[in-house]
Length: 223
Ligand SMILES: *Cc1c(COP(=O)(O)O)cnc(C)c1O
Image 1 (tube, rainbow, N blue to C red):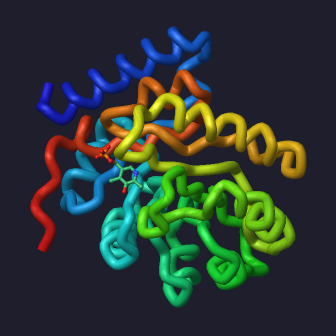
Image 2: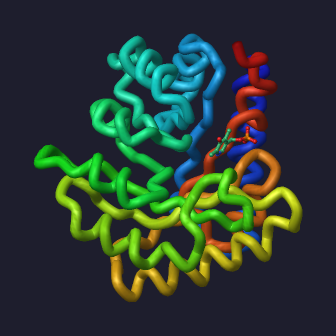
């Protein structure tokens, strides 16, 4: 097996172990392999190994890879901060957008075409630069997504804070998700868990993991 296949199999094994620890079935969990900064050839290798869900955080890079690999029929997940003026272009190739963080972006994504899956991104820190809406703002943003044609609210997304252990932060997301489901019963998904914290995320109910380097190896240096 290639190193890539080895790492993918190891991560899949750890995900299955964590699901068992949590009393959950691994089939409830979608693993999105994050390939930002990686060449399209690596995405094609992943596809050959059975990966269907790919995560990217920069529009131009994602758009180019999605076009080059269109024949593979992958599901592209947009996970980075999204400029309002790029919103419609991202809709064109993305199956899901995980970074809905402000009303203007919701409005820019309005469409009469087929719905795109959406996650409202929550900022679990006090630092606005980290992306996402503050927990107090989640409810209003959820209502706006629900009222906007062309968007299908799947649930919430978050990145664990750097300055506290991930598990309590993921537990806060679980509670927030339960609250959101009182207004949006279909918004059951939780996009959380990366290379170094996916075990804790699974224990707190993650349904969509976004895993990069643990599977791809180190990212090439930007530029
Ligand atoms: C890069 C990135 C990931 C994956 O990070 P790894 O540590 O490489 O697993 C997940 N989510 C977001 C939003 C990212 O930007």
